[in-house]
Amino acid sequence: MNKAFVREPDDDGVGRCPRCGSIGAAVAAETLSAHLPPEWVEKLSDTAFYCVYPRCEVAYFDLFERTVGIEHLLGPAYPKDPTGPLCCCFGLTLDDVALDIQEGGVQRVRAIVERSRTAEARCRTAAPDGRCCVAEVQRYYLRLRSSESAS
Image 1 (cartoon, rainbow, N blue to C red):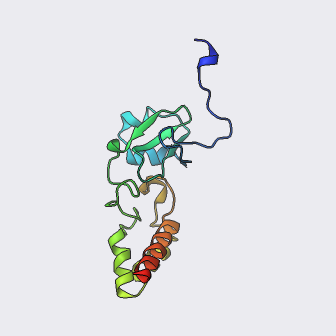
Image 2 (cartoon, rainbow, N blue to C red):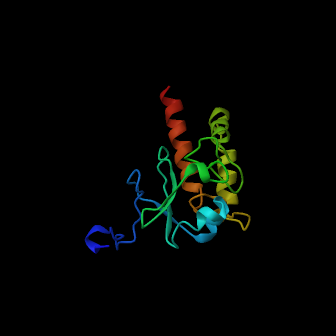
Image 3 (cartoon, rainbow, N blue to C red):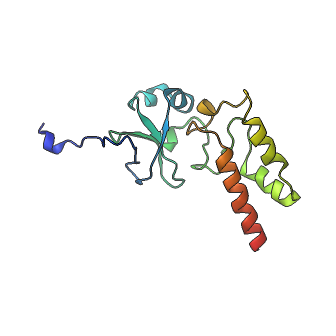
């Protein structure tokens, strides 16, 4: 085939989801193996990404625009599925954060921040994006708290 008709991957190393165009979170092979059946892991190259856009149907993709849809995930994954845990290592959910707000405290959120610093945290394999959840937990807490105070 003539190379003029073959799309080469971008050399900047930034993976953009072929479906929604969002910048993906680079993931390790062990992350993919923890969240996908082996036959779907094999469909992606060594450099793969998680699409973080909540409404996109793509879970993982690579620089060659090969995709794996959310229907192939082994379990619920936040933000793709709001029933999935915010913190995959320790099971913190959106409802847990809402309880902190209702109770006027930050016990659950604070506990996750503290536990994320321990050897118990296994973000690289537990989280679908392979990253620590603390920033997302804090962002969700602040967004929920500001919407509660605006009501």
